[in-house]
Image 1 (cartoon, rainbow, N blue to C red):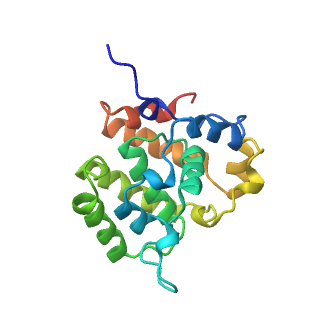
Image 2 (image 1 turned 180 degrees about the vertical axis):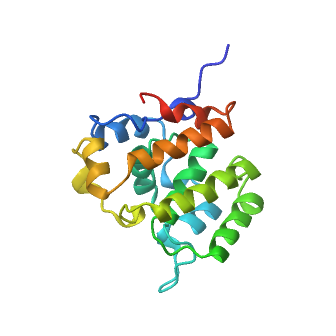
Length: 193
């Protein structure tokens, strides 16, 4: 019998409103990746530290800590469809993602990312859905938020303050669960609702 991998099991459901961002993040920090553990190609694509001055190759780039906070606020875990959703929604929330940018990111994640990080066609569908969902959301651009002042706020209050529409996310999560009923990260998102 193998013991479950904490990264596969971890997530803070969207229905969780009372936990503070610090409390939720400390759960993840116990086993989550450190920035230096992330493969370089992924850092080059997703971390703003590697952006060329004046050039935003991919809108919504965020450092690992910010990315982790976004996972928590969107109620997503750390599995591949969770990653696809978080990245897509973050990019979409900038309201600046072009079709070309979306296609280029899709190609890179499908064919260039290391094995274990690559997006399948299903993952890319979740990513594309999330880009559109982030675009129609009235929330603040997630990658641009300084989450430090929010660390001791309850998750529900943070979501409200940054304009994250829980009803919109919940509606999409129901669609994703129907679309992928056998996929853990697609079916657990409605826990507590």
